[in-house]
Image (cartoon, rainbow, N blue to C red):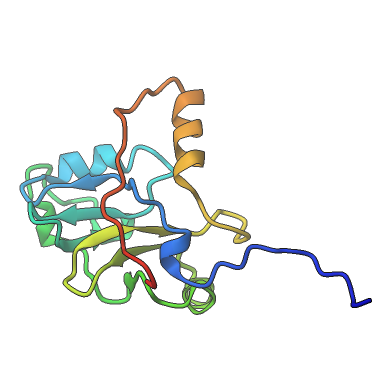
Length: 158
């Protein structure tokens, strides 16, 4: 008789836990749209996405200064540097980096820079936000978002 084993689910890659329905902005969005998005305290990172799905920039609240004009283009703000991760990246490495940098969000992109999703570390740092959790929170708040379809399938092995 061998030692009994417990089956556990091991999540090895970012793609396995990313949220596939993040809120996004279009490139022609303005700062007033961004501020409206940030009215939801669960939104920590705005994702500006081109029509072809390519991530243009990521914006966090500190990227927008108080004096920024409401009509300024959101593409004038933010960065991709240090804020993106490939879907195939090891989850433990991404999580460690997020904790070291005190960051709770990373945009997940494919090899062509297209947005696939968002890696969202929970507030307590133990676990990740999920599509189901986001939908449940919206439902309990009385918000009924349209049916969400995954942005993209990162494919096997990613």
